[in-house]
Image (cartoon, rainbow, N blue to C red; front, side, top):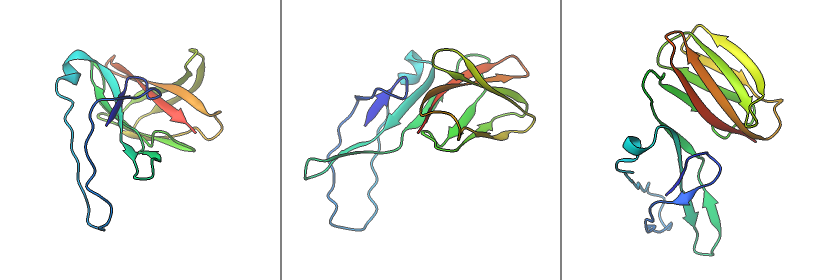
Length: 148
């Protein structure tokens, strides 16, 4: 299990031994990152790193968990990384969605009156971007996403 604060650079937080791959039965693994939400706020990214018997390494898709700050909106964005569309699911309707480059340049602005929105990011160059979500009640959250 690996953790990242920016969605780019991951460090190992736990190692679990595999159970083999000679069976087609589903195998479930679990890990609890105890206390991380009390010490860090905002999105934290996780992924699995699998080391195969031949020494090759595979990574799962990254998943983010957002430990909310006071007055922030709860949100889910997926897939991350993305190629074409970024889906945004809000806890409440009505928000301003702004995409910024990591250098701080505003690239795209969208208003959504619903809880769900689809952002077309197909034409963005590959890289890391910031999605800033501003709610009508004054809360805002920042999420990083990767465009392949």
